[in-house]
Image 1 (spheres, rainbow, N blue to C red):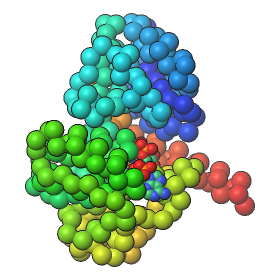
Image 2 (tube, rainbow, N blue to C red):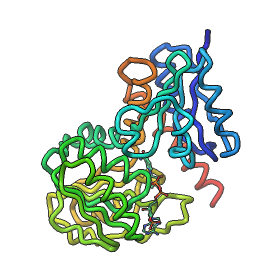
Image 3 (cartoon, rainbow, N blue to C red):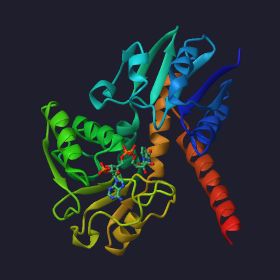
Length: 288
Ligand code: NAP
């Protein structure tokens, strides 16, 4: 029996997940088709019910449904309940289990790409949206010493700080933007600034020339690959990590939850990079 999996969101036409999950499944010889399931909110409960069928492995969940799927599931695993968002659903004999692999995928990207262990380190997180929530909980879980959350809307940063304080690990503080990056081991852009099509503009929300020389600068925005934040960080002589590794590793963790196999991350990177290059060349061809 051919199994199915897919990504639930609205819209999902732009998602890279079908490209790199499909490549990983084919590479491992697993008979699963991975589809893009564009789902408006009013059809979300119907779509989730279909995941209970025996031929469905599970799903990824993306914007805008990561919070709304939670009441439709049977159990929550990992830190998804604390984070308040699910990006991975696993079908186990008709019961649906929700997980959040965004934060753990971020931590794995730091370890794999630049051998950076969050334990005992200080972090400045720019932004307090859904992605920042997942990342902050995963950083505390990985032993981060302190996290400052800096957000344009201060109340949102303070709300996340309160939720993180309940974990009872690490020091957490909230502030507004722009924030000074001086004195941190790692500065992470989790705002939508620089993301194509987001409408958030290109104004980097901190002056990276003020960061200490050894600071690691990470942008989780992955379209385009070269973002204004990464450009500023390189100009300041900082080490950088782009957003694609987090995307691949959150997907790799989903793959591992569904299949029980190690994800072929090299295959996933290659598929995602060639698709991004194809889209970029189409974009330049249509804009010239
Ligand atoms: P979200 O929940 O909508 O949060 C957006 C965040 O960006 C908020 O903190 C918002 O501040 C801030 N923001 C938006 N425009 C801004 C501006 N002009 N100046 C300063 N701050 C601004 O979105 P999300 O789900 O957290 O995603 C954020 C970004 O991360 C997106 O670009 C998304 O594509 C990317 N992402 C990447 C991965 C990956 O795997 N690499 C995974 C998830 C998300 P306010 O609270 O003040 O509005």
